[in-house]
Amino acid sequence: MAPIELFHRVAATVPAYAAFLREHGVDPAGVTSAADWETLPFTTKDNYTRRHPLNDLCRGGTLQGMIAVSSGSTGEPSFWARTTADEKIIADRFAQVIDGFGRRPTLAVVCFSLGTWVGGLFTLACLRHLADRGYPITVVAPGNNPAEIERVVPQLAPFAEQTVLFGYPPFVKDVIDTARLPWADYNLKIVTAGEVFSEEWRTLVADRAGIADPVTSTASLYGTADAGVLGNETPLSIEIRRHLAAHPDKARELFRADRLPTLVQYDPAVRYFEESDGTLLFTGDNGIPLIRYHIADEGGLIPYGEMLGRIGFEPENRGPELPFVYVFGRSRFAVSYYGANVYAENVSVGLEQPEVNQHVTGKFVLEAPEGAEGLHITVELAKEEEPSGDLAKEIAAQVLTHLRRLNSEFAHYVPEWRQLPLVTLRPYADPAHFPPGVKHRYVR
Image (cartoon, rainbow, N blue to C red; front, side, top):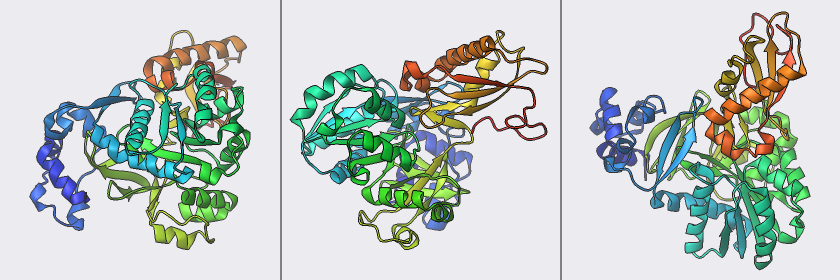
């Protein structure tokens, strides 16, 4: 559906959006051209979805379907309605991934968290829609339970010609590294979501899983709780990204940054992306339809032809002829750890507790290095305070308690043995982490 056509339908049928337009003095009848479209105000969580009752955000003002829950920085949940019609459309992204792997008898193992969180059950639903279309898929959903994955995969994998693990990158790596399974015997494929990872990570995990060609045997999904899967890696996008990883100057020129983003392709007829000041917004029909929704992900758009003209080599994989979106994520505000967005505000609460607040300034640096055994938190001590192992342990305990309380994604996405933060204490005004007179960055 064309964006302007969807706009008129949403303006006429979604009570919250009609109210939003009235607030901004927009007459829907006057929006007929691309120039008119560009005058429409952005919608966000703060100015739109959090300001209206959940049912008013839905078509016809009626809440229906399945509810997914995501957690923001304050721990206040956001609710997103899903219908089977939404799932069937987004199942096309999963179909594109499976077609890239080869349409053959497949065991799909859903290793995302199960429950109200968006990953697991939504993936399960989309895969079952593919089975209804005739894809030879058998689905099992052990969730992020390593023991259950290790129990069910060897019993079921021999009945398939390939096994696909769906999960967050660090969890999938943990399972491959620790499960005592002959992964190479299963013709393993990997589908991830939720985090940007390096091409070195992809190569390492593929090697440990016995995957000969990571370009055609792995894929990452770009999705949000707000709207499901927005785009997906293809063999073409992976080939391009791996080339750019080996040529950082080209990557820097293309993406205008020193870091390598996730690079996916998307269908503009289903998710219409726009770029604004280095961040992304999209329009799409969902259980909660969203018009010019600003998700604050850092990134940009590159048309298909322009991409092939700028990369400086001839890729072996040429299709599909869909545009590209690249995504850095909201690194200024959060770190992604096992697929959970961990915000600085979550950590601050732990440092404000009476057991520790007299010993620290409240400044810290939050990091989630690749392969980390826990979140890294470097904490600034109060003046004249000396570091101690007992204090570091108490801070870690307090932060963990309140992370679990405030951030349900952290509590349920991150395996328990990876939840305890690794705390380092640094002296007051430490020049490497807490230089005086400089605006502090809580997230690195």
